[in-house]
Amino acid sequence: MLSFLSSRKSIVVGILLLGLSACVAPYEGNFVTDAVLLVVDGTVTDLPEKQVVKIARAQLFNGIPATIPVEGARAEILVNGQTLIALREGTVKGQYEAPDDFRGKVGSSYQLRFQIGSQSYESSVEVMPGVPPIGKVYDRFDAAGVVNIEKTRALPANLIYIDFQDRADARNFYRWNWTLWEQQTWCATCQQGIYNLSANALSGSCQTTRSLLPSNLYDYNCLGSCWEIIRNLDVNLFDDAYSKGRPVVGRLVATIPYYQNLGALIEIRQSSLSREAYRYFKLLQDQSQNTGGLADTPPAPLLGNVRNRTDEQDKVTGYFGASSVASVRYWLDRQNVSGLPINLFVGLNNRPANPEPPSALRPPTAVCVPGEGRTPFKPVGWPK
Image (tube, rainbow, N blue to C red; front, side, top):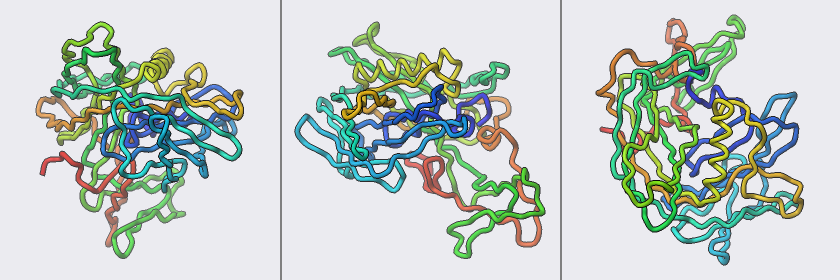
């Protein structure tokens, strides 16, 4: 994205601090340390979705922060202090998955346990609190809704708000995450090369071309429909200490840049947090605010609720939690916008697209490769 938007392209990999579900992309922030840190993160939810725990090591290579997925761990979740749910290592390195039919339940307790070689780790016990449903979702256009990191430019965005009825039966803590689907028309970029589509048109790759400069970039349009998947990287929390049991109206949960004139689909996830999880994410939120943004360097690694039982000196960051989730998908029609859009490609890449000059039978279109950031499959909730 452009420098004014937090993005996986603009953030240097450091400590992985994942969101509240397996469907949320990691937050990647810098850290000031030469130590190798174990990073553990995952959340049991009550939604019908894949329940995932991710384990990685964060360290510096020649002064550059990097994360290395931890493979070969033996992991399990203890439910209500009695039932063990074995986690299998998934196809994604460092990702450990519960059985497909495993779901969390409000009021139940969960504890993560895993072994890496001779080292034994465990999280604190997390009890899943309940969460109220989202009552209403609406948006407002702001011609200066997004500000760059340097605070020198303001660009248009749609601000997404929700209303909901806070529960009066207990002290409640909330976190909001969002996922945005935007229609994508550019599916491949080749550096010092050109894109070749396979004979069956199911895949493609870049072929190095020495006649091109190493800095040369060619971009290729999508073959068929494609959607870009964009997730929030901010921390949005709420403590109901002063609104306990009353309606919460006009809570800002997302700021969506005005990328293009087309409509877009957004999913809002309202998650419950334990008091301990809230404290952890509040520290993370405060660190990011104090350093100017999530892409900036926090003062120190943030230790979570996982400990090494074998070696208490081994510090672990990240958090394993349990959250009930209320989820709503909202069609952002952008009928209330004005002025020129940012342009999706420019917003994601900080430059305009540069298509390969046309010649005989070229350029080809590129395959929309499914992954965490892109899909060729129409999202549920996208209008026909």
